Image 1 (tube, one colour):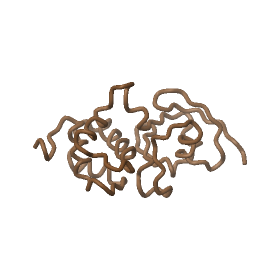
Image 2 (cartoon, rainbow, N blue to C red; image 1 turned 135 degrees about the vertical axis):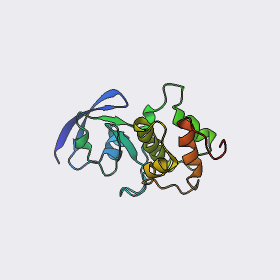
Image 3 (cartoon, rainbow, N blue to C red; image 1 turned 180 degrees about the horizontal axis):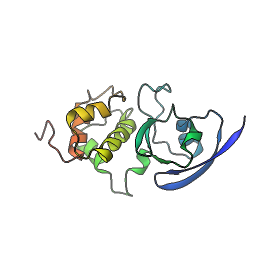
Image 4 (tube, helix red, strand yellow; image 1 turned 135 degrees about the horizontal axis):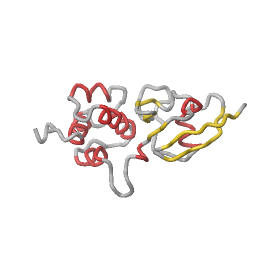
Length: 160
C-alpha cells in the first residue's frame, strides 16, 4: 500500500502526515493525529457523529478520503474552545441540556458551527435543515435547536 504525504491545517495549526491509499479522514484524525473529538458512529455516513468542517463546509469525515484535505482547513470540536473558554455553542448546549449521551454532540456542534458561520441568526427551519444529517437518540432535537438559537442570540422555546 502506498503512503501519500498530506499537509493541511487542523483547528488553525499546520498538520503534515502520511496517509494510506483509501484512508478516510476520520481514521486520520483519530489515529493519525490523535484528535479523538470526531466520533466513530455508523462508519457509513448516515449518523453524522463524525461531522467536521472542511474549508467552511460540514463534511462527514468517515466518507471523506484523507488525501482530499491537502491544503485545506479542517475544524473539529477540539478547536471550538479557546483554552478554558468554551465556544458559545458549547455553552448553549450545556445550558439547554442539548447533550445527553454524547453520541451526536460533536457532529451537532460542527453542523451548527458551520451554519452560524454563514448565517449568524438562522431561522428555526434553517437550523433543522442544517442538523438534518445528524441522528440524535436522546434529546428529541428540541434542546439542540434551542441551544443553536441561544448561541445565535435568539429566544428559545424556554425564553420565548
